[in-house]
Length: 162
Image 1: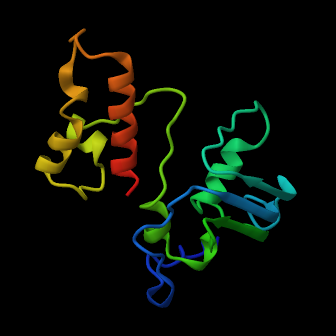
Image 2 (image 1 turned 45 degrees about the horizontal axis):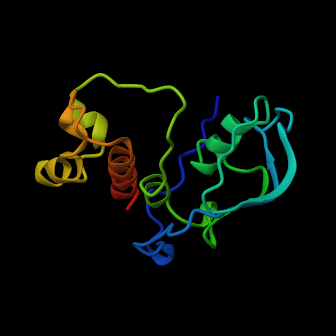
């Protein structure tokens, strides 16, 4: 059995800017996906654009396959995925995966500390994490208005997607 090597973590001559992605616009151009070379095509020529801030949630529509392709867990058989003007297959896996995030429908904690669940790649210092999360760790306080909590949660998501 032959297992293809994973694409490079970094493509030195094609690194995205540090601010990428800045908007979150995703374009699918005649995207076709199959999970292995001889398997049937499961996404068959999808062309569409997800504008900035769009929520996607139709049951049975291929969201899991799209997420797998977006993170390059499976590469397109043909077609392109473009995020804020950059093709996902043109950059390295580390550059791609470290810049994208998913907010799952079901909350999940992985084994390990809360700290490693917040920053599993150990990119940020403890001080950075405490500073950005100080409002969220109020645990049980009813003094914080809901809109303040939502604003801080939004700030946390932006912080980790930088």
